[in-house]
Image (cartoon, rainbow, N blue to C red; front, side, top):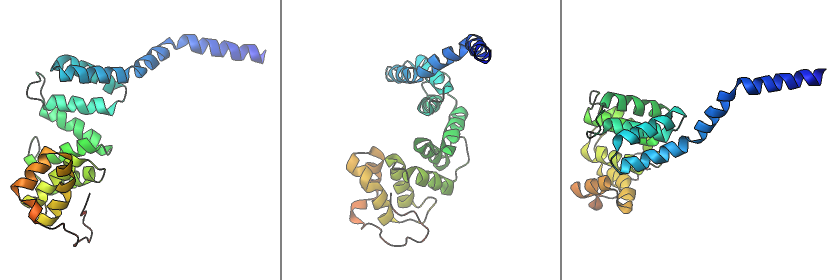
Length: 198
């Protein structure tokens, strides 16, 4: 009798939740949606890129959500909305997503959607840099070279820009050349409570 009751419960739960299988199949497709979104984005079909990124993001794909933020930032996207982009990057930055932390630093350093706050920009660039995100290291080099949000330190700018220059990062190359960082020795001192190297 117990076996029969257990089987009845099992079968009734299976038939009552057919939508669970559908949701699972869609969850499996989240990577397909993301890849399709990337292809459409490369072809500059932003409407279809958005549609696919949105579907992937609904199933928890943070890369797709980040790309939605990129689309909302894009001047060529008919639904451009810098505030929505900021909200997405802020949400992902709280999850320790390095590219989003870098974007947040850019928002605060440029004063887009928010008031300029160089110190906060530096904090975001540092968080992303600590995860090895080279573009954030380049942005941090810019902050040290220009003295925005931090005390100017060309030696420290040298340290943060060097890896990016070696990898051909255009931001690092620009900072390196504009501030002639090759002539400054690497900053190996003044490490008290400072994030001094990537």
